[in-house]
Every structure is written in structure tokens, then in C-alpha cells.
Length: 146
Image (cartoon, rainbow, N blue to C red; front, side):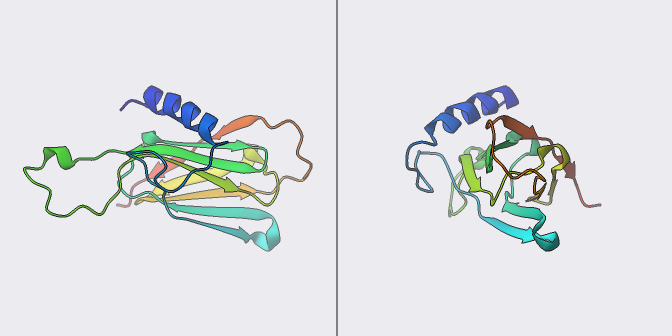
């Protein structure tokens, strides 16, 4: 899968958000685990997401109003196996919608992807009124431990 394909899939899945979704709403999808916390005296939202085995270029983060969307895909490498003896890891696309407590300052937001854990730091916006809900992508830094 190429990044352009992933982004087209993200836009398609984004359009489906108005429909009720379960963790496996579509065949070949999964719902990653996430922790969402307020830190820094309530001035920052900290989001940590388990994404082991997902390539960093297959992850997209978008903020729209007071909602964070995470989309991407984990490729299944089992097709290279002669036989699958046990399968517990879900593969395919994911789309996670996280409702934030208020709008965030996207221009100072940061994201890091290290060892399969995605950490997103979202400072609460000084102006908490939600105006026009623009979609803004968050860029992330990917690091590998030495």
C-alpha cells in the first residue's frame, strides 16, 4: 500500500464516521488501544496509541474542531508464511476518533512514533470557542531506539 492509497482510504473512512462503527466494522480493520489524559495542569491533552507493526508512513493524524482522527494500516505479513499456526494480531485499516475536551492549538501540536507507541501532545487552544471546523494534519517525528 502506498501513502496516496492510505490517504484516499482515510478520506473514505472519514466520510463513514457518521455511521455507527464497532471495533471491526469492516472486514480487514482493527481498533488500536489509546489512552487520553489531561496533563500540565489541564493545559495539554496527551494521547498514547499502541500501533506496533504499523509503518510510520502509514499513519495519518488529523484534527477537526475538537476531534482527533487517527487513520492508517497495519500490513499482514502472514502471506509469506507456509502455514499460520496461531493468529491473534489484527491487520488492515484503522480509523480512531477521539473526542477532545476542547479545541487544541494544532500549530504547536507534536507527535512522536517510537517503538510502536504513538504519542501525541496537543496543547489546549487559548481561544476555546469552536469556529469553523478545518481539517488540519499533524506532522510527526519518527524515532528508533539505538
